[in-house]
Length: 141
Image 1 (cartoon, rainbow, N blue to C red):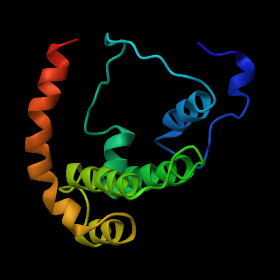
Image 2: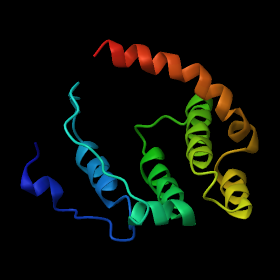
Image 3: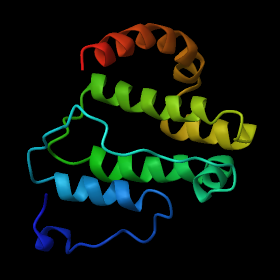
Image 4: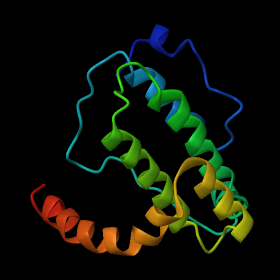
């Protein structure tokens, strides 16, 4: 829960898909967050929704990069070698997830500017390492 005045910054209208996520970042930035173990919402997907169109055009990844730049470079996020590598892996992961929807030019441009081809090529191996861990965490909830 938030006080109304906390949301006075409004939505960042330059983002077409991630306005809500940016608002959450904005609201949660000055406070300690508590997480609920239960699922409290569901997401419905269909091929004609705007999110799917943004995935195909690469716009969703572009907006992720905008948010990473805006909030990832805040003073409370220490710029260490590890944090930089994690950020590059997260971008590579998004590119991997949407790889069948992106043009080669778009994919290569994002990787060159914000990640690396190495992290992109490592995604299947990283996924195999993370998958069992996620199942264990889910089973403990």
